[in-house]
Amino acid sequence: MPADSAPFSNSPFARKNPAASYFLPAFAISWTAALLIAAPELFQFAPLAKFTGILMFPAMLLGPGIAGIFLTRKLDGRDGLKDLFARVRLVRFPLRCYTAWLVLPVLVLGVLFCLKTFVSPVYAPNRFRIGVTFGLLAGFLEEIGWTGFAYPKLRQRFAVLPAAAILGLFWGLWHASVIDFLGAASPHGKTLPAFVAAMAAMRVLIAWFYGHTQSV
Image 1 (cartoon, rainbow, N blue to C red):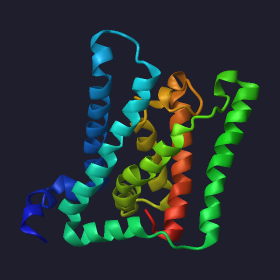
Image 2 (tube, rainbow, N blue to C red; image 1 turned 90 degrees about the vertical axis):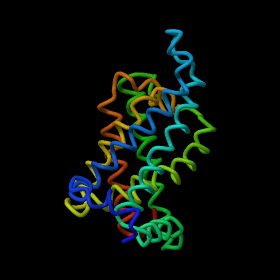
Image 3 (cartoon, rainbow, N blue to C red; image 1 turned 135 degrees about the vertical axis):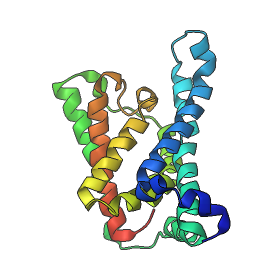
């Protein structure tokens, strides 16, 4: 292993708890970036404008990617980093794996329509077109950390379902500062547990997809 990775990689905590070592910097970098975007309005004790909240999300995408790449390099060396980027570039797999992704939007829309009908109209889906761009950025920058680093490390200790559920819990909490501005069904603020549960369920599906393709 390269000498420059030795001090961190020899840390007992990092070696025994690589996933926990990932969550701390991922959250810290993301929430600090979001805070810097929101700071001017927060210091004026003004409510955050919707556009400010929307800008916070792309800033937060820095956290998972930076933490995942840094810890892969420090814990697994150059070979680990090469393997990570190889999994990022892996895009050829059976068509059924691509079509499986239709399950996610169908389930989300189904749940939102049920909530709109039986709970409150605030859950009605809306057309958040810029969300497509956010989705592409998130799929690349976020998943380098969540799927590329954290999930394989959790799998070293847990079975598929517990590992995916644990990761989904942290993934949902990571969104806490911006969920009211993501446009899917605002507001979420009073239903954070439901949002986290939805993210955990979605992460289980992502883990299934990863298990069949090994593609980040």
